Image (tube, rainbow, N blue to C red; front, side, top):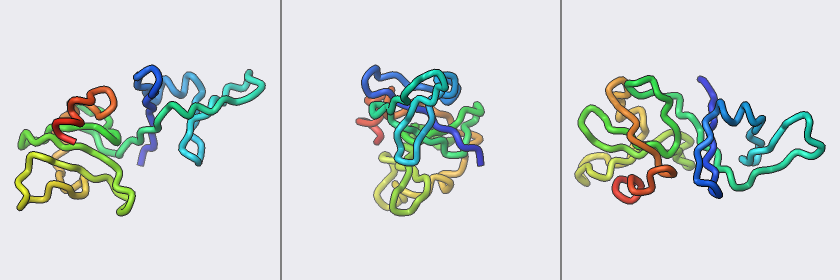
Length: 134
């Protein structure tokens, strides 16, 4: 599985893609914080204001990487919020619009039509999606 991380800067409200983080020599530590590992700096700086966002290993119909916190529209036109379930150590999806008698929250792979799904935004850059569908 490919491991990729992007970062949400809580100060500037900007998303850093993995390529940008690599260019800036930002590395994720085991404590979940980013640190600048530029060899020319005398002291590495820890960035507490950048939230790590993990790649799920799944891609949408356009080949775009699906990350924690993304919202996707599946082939049934359902909007699914993707997130990491800490208790089950697995990627989960939440579909608020599903009737209560159907599974609203379940392992993400059970939504299963990724080749036909499309990312429509994420919870950080699109907070209205979070309010409406999260």
